[in-house]
Structure formats: structure tokens, C-alpha cells
Length: 201
Image 1 (cartoon, rainbow, N blue to C red):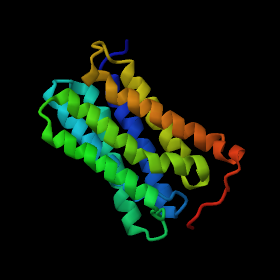
Image 2 (tube, helix red, strand yellow):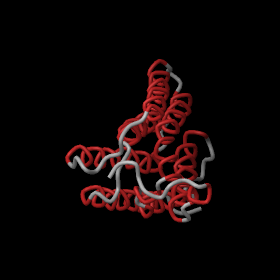
Image 3 (cartoon, rainbow, N blue to C red):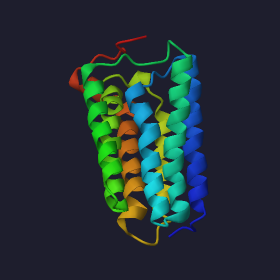
Image 4 (spheres, rainbow, N blue to C red):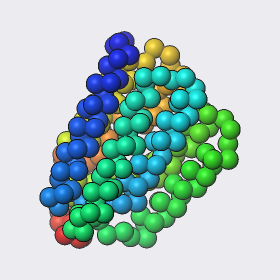
């Protein structure tokens, strides 16, 4: 087990990856799905609040940066009209289900249920970007997700109390970001016949 303070390094790694994504968005190389990034900026703050109530401590830094970073990406995409992904019905449906997850968190008083609902909501929010990374990997920044997965893994290695409120969100972030990294790096979708060019330039 690593010293708990390594979580601070994990948070810095996570934010560094996000700043790279922001830079790519400004240049128009990355085209963030606004449904995903809006909810990615909202949902982690829910998990962060629940973790604070549970007394998680430094481990919650990763959760906080997982919300703050996407907020920066969202703002950047709004400033650059050429740096966004055209929303489809699928994106809206996933966003709506994610919002339901947020509402479920708001009506429950159980912190652990809040974490479960926030992960569920975050997962549905992530689906549009997960699919986009699979079909159109050139519209995403691999390094951002790679650094996020490494930061999450580093956070997991600092945990000495294996309770849901401590490990659930970092584990989820690790699996999700590693999956997206693999999709982008190995262009998995092209092996299934999906086009290589994005739908919207």
C-alpha cells in the first residue's frame, strides 16, 4: 500500500491529462461530447460530497479532480464552436438516464447509495464518449484517459480500508478510462468496419 499522500500526485496527474485535452479542444483536434462532459463535471461532485460525508479524506481528491477537469473541458468547448461533437438521440437518451441517476441521489439519504447512483449516472453519461472513442478514435485524446486511469490506479494503491465509499469511484474511473484508452490506441472500432473519420469536423 502506498502512502495516502500519493493521492495528491494522482490528482495532479488527472488534471494534467485534462489540461492536455483542453489544449486539444482549443485546437479543434478533440471534439468533446457535451452531454458526457457536462455530466462528468456534475456527477463526480456528487460522489465527492458523499465521500466527504463518509470521512474518506485524501482519497476523495481524485473524485474532485474528476469533476473539476471536465468542467474546464465543457467551458472550452463552448468557447470554440469548432470543438464539439454533434449530439444524437443516443446522446440525449444517455444524458436523460444519467440525470435520473442524479435525481435518485438527491432523494436518498444513504451516502453509499449516493455513490452507487453517481457511478451509474456517470456510466450512462460516459456511454456517448465510449461509443465515440470506439467508432471515431481520432476525435479523442488518448493521453488524457491514460493519465486518468493511471491516477485512479495510484489512488487504489493508497487505500487501506476496502469499503465501498473508499474504492468504488476510483475503481470505476480506472476501468472506464483504461477501456477508452484501449479503444483509441488500438482503433478497435475499425476492426469492426466502422469509418475512421468523424461525423462532424
